[in-house]
Structures are given as structure tokens and as C-alpha cells.
Image (cartoon, rainbow, N blue to C red):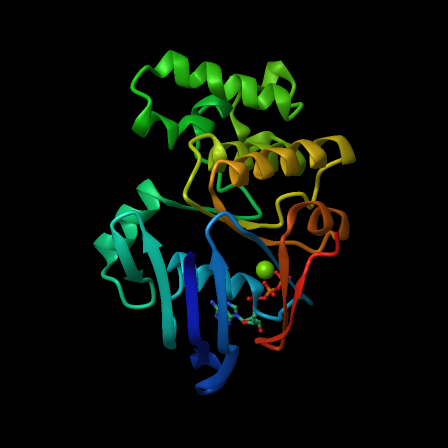
Length: 237
Ligand SMILES: Nc1ncnc2c1ncn2[C@@H]1O[C@H](COP(=O)(O)OP(=O)(O)OP(=O)(O)O)[C@@H](O)[C@H]1O
Ligand SMILES: [Mg+2]
């Protein structure tokens, strides 16, 4: 079954400061994502990868086309659904992990990681224990667990961001460059964590420039060029 069907999706931006010049970031995009599948989204900088992900997560409103998502309660067109429906899906089913952590002031690393988990795990100590285990697996030094992530390094913040996105396994995960600033060992830990989610049924769309990550993670790749799909290929076994 397809969890996502993107039909004739286009997105353009009108730049008012340039007398209404139009940028066509996505042109007539068509693809499906199967339940439990991991698709790698590739393409040069500026090819439209993040725009596509943001249209699906509804950070951006699409200009035309459909994004049919099979939610637990039936199909929803994410290009047209009302904001309440989108917000409720974000709380329960769809998680977006951006490349950078948007830091929340004066919340400890462990509590940042627990944000989504606190919604389903009412025992806060149990939730925090799970977060600590995850941060330990990701190699984040124990002295940072109760510190504020605002001063953390890029790779440390990225690990907090990933832990936060997957500690409560989503049905559908959108993840932008999960391994970009990580060393090889941590990269493998993150890849293993995402593969474990997949084994438990999560469907994943993952932007990456990293050949190793794409090879290990993806069932299929979609390559974008100037806002269009140029190639769709199965991963080489
Ligand atoms: N909010 C916006 N307003 C105007 N133009 C935008 C906006 N977001 C993206 N664009 C434009 O759309 C095009 C695609 O950008 P996008 O961020 O999707 O590329 P990308 O493939 O994710 O690149 P990168 O690999 O550098 O992250 C670019 O020309 C970009 O300038
Ligand atoms: Mg991008």
C-alpha cells in the first residue's frame, strides 16, 4: 500500500522584491512512497529537495497538485487539508527532522528529546530514562544530557534533533540530511536507528548528499534537477 502519493505537484515562489519574479522550485512532481519504504531524495543544491519536503510537511503550501497521505484514519490531501488536520497529524503521525536544531532556551537536552514522547508517555522519569539511553547510543557525553543545547556543537545538536524526531516512532518520517555532520561511528548508529524504525513499519523520505548513507538506508532514490524528477532508481544491492 502507498502511504504517500504525490500527483502533479508544483511549487513556485513569487519574489516581490524582484518585481514579482517567479521561481519554479518544483515542476509537476509525481511519485509514490510505499508503507515501510525508505526513499532517498537527492540532487544538487537548489534542486528543490527541501521545498518538496516542506510541501509534504505543509510548511509550504503547494501551488498545485495533490499530496495524498494515507493516515491511520484514511486518506488526506496534505496540499489542501485544513490547518487543524495538519497540526493533528504532526502530533500523532508525521515527524519532520530538519537539518538544524531550532534551539529552545533553557530546556535541557534530555527534555528537548522527550518533547514528543511526553505526549504518549505520562511517566516523565521513564521517558527521560529512554532519552538518556538514546543519547548514550548516539555517543553524546553524559555531562551534556542535562545541559542546554544552545551551546552544543553542530554534530551534538544534530544528534539531539534526530533523537527528538524518532524517540516516539512516527508513522511517516521526513528527515533532511540526518548524517551530514556526524563521524562514521555515529553515522552508523543513526542509520541503524532509522532502519529499526523501518522494520517497525515507519515510512521514510530522507534527503542526503552522502553516498554511504544512501547506500545503507534507501530502498529507492529520487533525483531532482531544477525542480523536476530526473531519475528514479532502485538501490543497488
Ligand atoms: N521560501 C522561499 N522563498 C523563495 N524561494 C525559495 C524559498 N524556498 C526555496 N526557494 C528557492 O527554491 C529553490 C529550491 O530550493 P530548496 O531549498 O528546495 O533546494 P535544496 O535542493 O533543498 O538545496 P540544498 O541542497 O542547498 O538544501 C531555490 O532556487 C531556492 O532559492
Ligand atoms: Mg535543502
